[in-house]
Image (cartoon, rainbow, N blue to C red; front, side):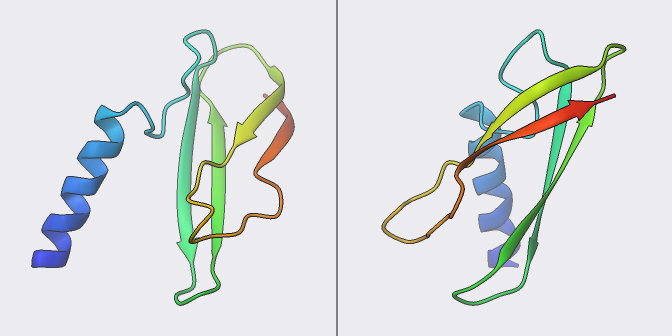
Amino acid sequence: CKLRLTTARAYVKVLENGQGPISAANNLPLHLDAQVQGLGPCFKIKLAVKNTGIRAVHSIPITVVFDSKLYHVPRPLFRIATLV
């Protein structure tokens, strides 16, 4: 129960800081879902990006923000070609 409360508080803090699953750019109607696969020192994060607008968007930059003292991300910046 304590873990659930801690997780909920951390999620609210992420949303309040503007780092939630909605794009930061007001002109790009995107929705981002992240799923953690695995436990321990090595895991993967699977991202699902959805275009919620009516127009296709191209060359979308994605930046992974992380604590470099704890984690290593081989490509912290990449682009998604096109979302219809």
